[in-house]
Image 1 (cartoon, rainbow, N blue to C red):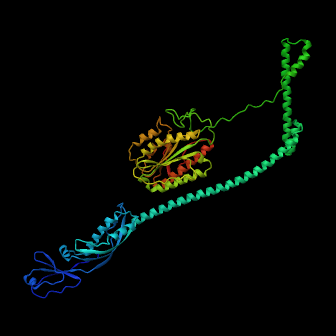
Image 2 (cartoon, rainbow, N blue to C red):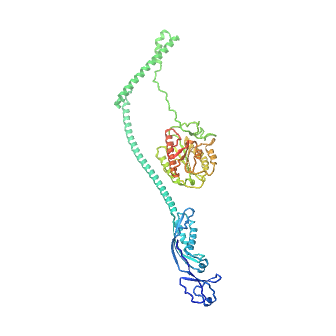
Length: 578
């Protein structure tokens, strides 16, 4: 049973005749008349006339001393501003009775119940103004309130109250989680900076090594050129027939005797073939002249010599120059001859588009859009998604060559869709956005925003690059669409017939996102993925980050090899719907 503090110490009938009991200094005596009126005589006793006439019927003694207590208001937790978490208050409180008639009138049996209840009500009004993280400020506000006395209607005055405020256990776990999340975020930044510094250091060492190698090769080449010029000066005054050239070659490359002999035999064969061809052609021409009767017998010898002497000397046939056919791949977006955008009804990289004339391995850029869910359903995985973006940043800059070919943009969707990172070429100075948590889950705004930014991004890229490939969108959804099925109309406006630069959409559903909705958002069923049932949203977000990193890396290296193919790399924690 909780402790109690009674304030009415005694209740006695008043005798008309007889001595009146003395008054204790720390007590007050309250008299009640027969009709219920109360009288506090303060510093005097009832007079004889009061006794004789029977003015008073009942005598009450009320405790007027100071009371000090330390207590914890465990049964009355203090709510914070979000009404979800609570503070626990410990009180060091002092109070006394200042109006004993109210104590008697209200028949206050337990002072602690009255005082703690009234103090708790005041404290709750203050605690609701502060977040659970602001326990120190809330405590200061409470103690400032009790710098002034609290006078209760029950005749009690609280003249001193010191409050010690702390979050309860559930709130402490919440704050511990927030603190750990902030530490993880800072650790992620530190690891990112460390990887960046490591790569920069390796690049500097590699640059120094290449400079040294180039200087050595330059010195060797300069020495070789000096020797070659000296030999050319020595050979300048001499005749350079085939034999002289072969002798010079053998003097320079004595180990290539077999090659020199092969060259001599080849030249001898060419000369023999040339003589045979000239002989056949000359004889054929001479017989044709004779057959037509153009020669007289006396002219035969002279004209034959002239004919033979006037025939052109043969030359070794040279093979016709050939070129490798240009390499085409993917579904490239190319500019029109006049430099204008695509005509009505066409789209970037659609089947049947004319291939770019300069389409060779490594040519062209690929726009990539990453759309992340910031609705409350994705709150648990915001930090994981931020780490995934930083990992993608590192991948683009550490895999050789792909940062030149990938252009990246990041959008976030909740009540509306925001462009967190405009279309950019990623470098070490690029700051990747940090996902947040916002209200709403209107996924149609994502497709509407993409329909606005994609044409402008692609047109700008086409002004800088002869080849721009069809955009690719990586979409992560974690909740249930609050805009019903209206998002389907915005998706059709983005990817349907007649839409410019129809992007390919890779959709990944985690958390509350359904498989049917995810499949409908993807361009094809094989580009739709959902988390396996046993994964929580945080683990599923890690799987999405793996899919994003691996697929973008494969797209970039495919561009460098001359073969662009969208084939997402599905990690074990996701299930492909197609």
